Image 1 (tube, rainbow, N blue to C red):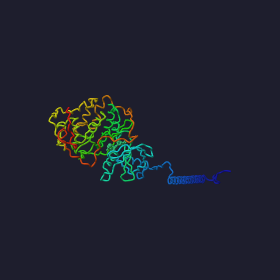
Image 2 (cartoon, rainbow, N blue to C red):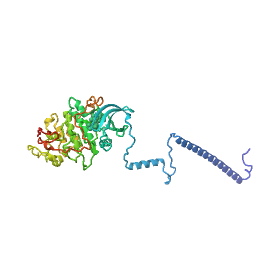
Image 3 (cartoon, rainbow, N blue to C red):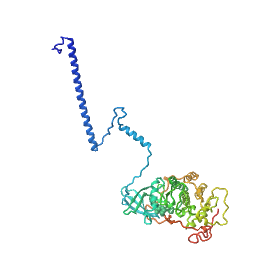
Image 4 (cartoon, rainbow, N blue to C red):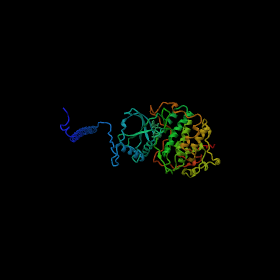
Amino acid sequence: MSAKSRWADDDPETEAIVAQQKREKEEKRRAKAEKQRQLEEKEKKKKNNDENTQAAINGESGPPKKRLRLSNDPDAPPTTAEVDQQDRKKQSSLLRFPVREWGPCRHVDNFERLNHIEEGSYGWVSRAKDINTGEVVALKKLKIENSPDGFPVTGLREIQTLLEARHSNVVYLREVVMGNKMDDVFLVMDFLEHDLKTLLDEMREPFLPSEIKTLLLQVVGGLEFLHAQWIMHRDLKTSNLLMNNRGEIKIADFGMARYYGDPPPKLTQLVVTLWYRSPELLLGADKYGTEVDMWSIGCIFGELLTKEPLLQGKNEVDQVSQIFALTGPPNSQSWPGFRSLPNAKSLRFPPSAPAPSSSGSLPLLPRSRFPYLTNAGLGLLSSLLALNPAARPSAQQCLAHPYFREDPRPKPREMFPTFPSKAGMEKRRRHHTPEAPRRGQEAPELDFAGVFGGAPGGDTGEVGAGFTLRLG
Ligand SMILES: Nc1ncnc2c1ncn2[C@@H]1O[C@H](COP(=O)(O)OP(=O)(O)OP(=O)(O)O)[C@@H](O)[C@H]1O
Ligand SMILES: [Mg+2]
């Protein structure tokens, strides 16, 4: 049977109309099928979206969905990728400042006390173990009882400066913890096995020249960093220099440290433990700078060489006597302006004092006191112990001194000998060194008339008497 219309053969025009109707019908059928497919697709997408939203609500993770931009329409909202990029641009053009996070201090119960190490002027130090991590630390309980303002300014300065002074040669303050009472405040620091004072007391022989160079380079390196941060330490001495069994040195005890400015502000003169105190402080200067730390470095250098503190004055007057005995007395050429310092007025020089040298070069300390030191070493020591603060090298200049580059070279830290640690084992005896000055105490009025062996002077009445000035 033919599929042709009954009228197909009848009329070609009719035949064309029928074919057209057939095409249209076919077209409609295809459009309907396409519409149905699109509808199904839409349904499927909606279902997927609902599932993702539910997953997000439930906290399930999945790859983040990025919104795709479908046109270049400038009013269209930016895509996530574009927002990210803009944020990054914004961040790099903004100045960012570190914001310190504040939080409650932990309780000291988190530490188990192992042994007492030392009682200093400003705190009790013990070795302790962090119960949570098992790490051994040093705990310094601040002495608060004698502070009329509630909290000792020495403690505040110690915390503030130690938090700022992050350097490999400065002791690391881990955190501050509290006890049950408001005045139970403890500094938690990295534990170091030795302080240089105890170590020197225990050693039979002094350090080797190569070891002294390594020690000095580290201390002065730490000090250079402090001075660059505008921090003066103001109590450098061997008992405040800690050393571990890997030959590393860290500057500690920031109770006297403070920020300074340029020009220097008026400051208290009663700083630095007597034996390490500079002549300008002893003569009453209230404007001074980082040179006071450089003088202390000179004293420490001398102590490392001989194993004994260099200038062991019994009091301020005796200290000045001992300084002048070592360096020779000052004159207006070697130390211009020293005469105007408050306590210099009472100084009476012996008639035999040498005429001011006209060479202008820094006088060397007597070689007989340091027989094994090289010329370069003696030059550095003499400049650190220059009476005139302006003639002392800065920490940076000190590090560049030829002494550190001549043989014997500084010993690598890993080659350093190890020593048994007293701090790690037992309660130690007190050092026989003067105490750090007490804060808030007035500098005493001093009569230096007896410095050169003359009249009374000093609080014993005989200090300086019998003292022969070494002029050479
Ligand atoms: N982190 C530490 N690791 C090991 N021992 C330490 C540590 N900190 C301090 N010590 C020991 O405790 C002693 C006293 O500490 P520190 O100098 O901080 O206290 P201080 O009360 O300010 O002392 P002072 O006034 O006598 O100089 C140090 O000389 C050292 O022997
Ligand atoms: Mg100390």
